[in-house]
Image 1 (tube, rainbow over the protein chains, first blue to last red):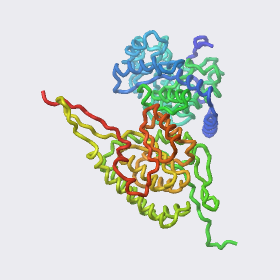
Image 2 (image 1 turned 135 degrees about the horizontal axis):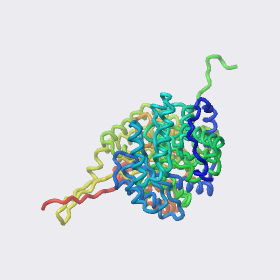
Image 3 (image 1 turned 45 degrees about the vertical axis):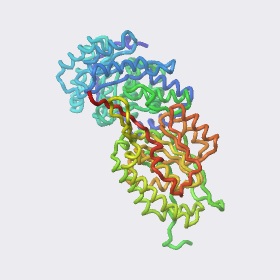
Image 4 (image 1 turned 90 degrees about the vertical axis):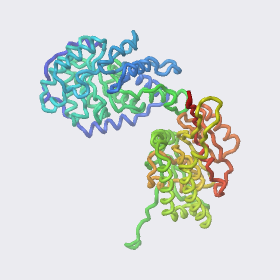
Length: 308
Length: 290
């Protein structure tokens, strides 16, 4: 099933018709996912799948080309003493670092994702956001992680947000567009669901929970609501949209719970890095430590793994 | 018919102590602690390797701040533990008696425990002076060696000394800036859990001391093999146990410290070398002259 096969309709949806979220139901469902027992071989396979879905991220004001090269090196060589590991899906950096990351990764199939549109606040005029997006794509970004204008969304200016996402999507060209809803600033699950629907109709290839700069970042209830929105959008339009929870997922066990939730909400078709990503910086090391534990039977120390 | 004024006594649930919290064991397993006549005194958590793993994570997280705390502060906090213990001495005496120790010996053990904490509190800003050195070298360098805490210390506490033996191993480790995970005596675990409450009330940061109860033969291997543990101390066991611990500890070159056959009630059981056991010596070569 290919993304390009289904044309994106750029009709603004009627957000008044968006399904209301049953908050208690969502929490109970999430608790169920966390009670699944994933052991032995299944656990190893799940952990490897998690690794393959990670967007290894560095989004700090203190980032330097050296730091980004180090991150890319880590993306290419997660833990060479363990053979058979997948590499991560992408590295995620600021626009000024796209060129550095692209060069450091060479012609490997690890993608370069760039945040854009005045990440993390999104508080700049549209033409600057568009220009920033074009620059990142010209520098070689394969994926663009944009933030929505939360202020406008909360004010009810859905049309403004919709047009903005559609315009950025156009500026992306061939690059995939991930739309960050910054769920920690939206407040309620109902708004998160509405923002998801809005973003998908405006052309998002992925919807993403958070920038990682606001607490709470990704949580399982929020992610479940977004996954359900993706499912219903798929039933409605036949177009698959990807999901990226980001921020706050630093433990392997939690990541496996997310996979369980993905499997039981969207099904097998979404269980690849084409359709699901983890935005994380320290998750990879925890997963590696768990894999090493499975291989050796001995609990591991961060001292023996590359720095985040 | 019970009189209206009488009440049902509230029995204490003995839990484990991880990261400044008192959870039940993650495994949901317990073992009965019995007195000499076979009556059950309490159900004790049978700690699992996951409890141990969680404790090591907590101890590792607490290490940076605790090792950076001033020697003065660490001494103050140890002194504070002693103060808190003094105020609850009767409870500890009662628990020891419940586990079959005579009242007189129980009293002596609690007193000795408090004194031992004061002893190590006093060493907090002195052991560095005793064990550090300026070294003579045949080049134009100023060469000196200082102690640094090794990190996370895993302690398998003595089986025959439920309170004094436990504290005699915790105090020298933490006064030197280490954090610790301790497996309490399997035979006398009550005081260990109550001591955790004392620690908790003494401004000891969460994660610096973690106390588990459970079976040695289940947990010793984990204590010795965990890659994020920097030193393992064991106080019981024959040569086979000792050998197994050393083999497993070799993977990440842990310090292995045997305190088998130590008489914890004797004065000889307290000395600054117990602090030094869990310290690393860092030597610096500092160029001087032209």
